[in-house]
Length: 133
Image (cartoon, rainbow, N blue to C red; front, side, top):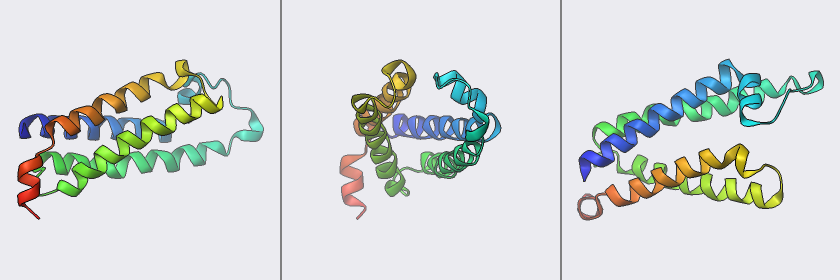
């Protein structure tokens, strides 16, 4: 079980870092790829916001990789990963319900976060974590 948790944490950390880098390096291409279309000149400062989102993926991504090396020692980061994934699914679904985005635009991210949330919960070391308090 711990091995599965290690792999899931490291993989999720790597994906987070790559996503963060994409937000920083290629914000306009990423927006277009997601289906938001061309960003008008008046909205060019959105690249700054995308860069800030990017660093908010990179920083925890690094620590998730660290946590993946020894999940019991870094159990708080495992809990963080679970919460992050669940909140990302909820926020994505809420955005679809509100009509802000379509499932075609964010569905893959919702599914990916849902799969990782499930994996983290399945592989979570319930007994060992209880004993390490």
